[in-house]
Image 1: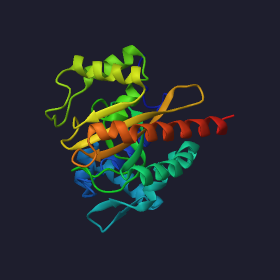
Image 2: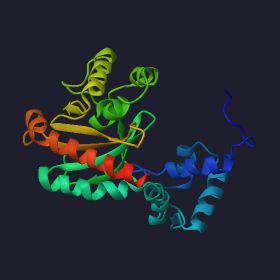
Image 3: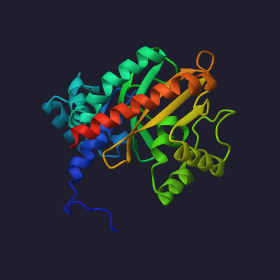
Image 4: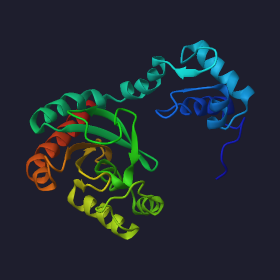
Length: 259
């Protein structure tokens, strides 16, 4: 199937506008026109028109040289969150879970090869990277991601594993693609996922599925702790029953809302 072309169900100017928005990041929170053009793959003239349009709409501000996003850009993300009733249903359950286990709780969905955090109730900083709503991590090396990947058809799962690359492997990371696939298939069989220090040394994470009315996994719910405080054994013994119960509560409530 051919990719959409400009003028054929594809608005190129809109796509370029999204490229400009995505050019801003934690590494580049403010940029010159030349930097935006380079990161977005556009000409200076094209990037300038888009930046000025975004500035007129209130999504970008500038001091005359540097451009930066404004808080209004959050409206775009919150439009997704507010359109999905699951997150309103999940948040109080997650807060209750955090109060019980005294560890951070997150919900995520699958987007390509990544998970995207859509809800998070933190207790303390666990990882060297800053995790918040909208953050992305490689699906194959996270408990949340493996929980979501386990629900994919076999061909899609194998394709994901075939493209997987650990960004900073640890001594515990799956050593090859066959081992990685075996670990995800085990998740499929058991209905929960534990990842012990594969993404980052010291980080232990446990995940459970959130099901839609049709029984498919639509999101994953997870708890993370530090191995020195909440090791893998403790996570399985003490946290797993509470996490599974929380995920089932969210799934049941969502099913009632969808009737």
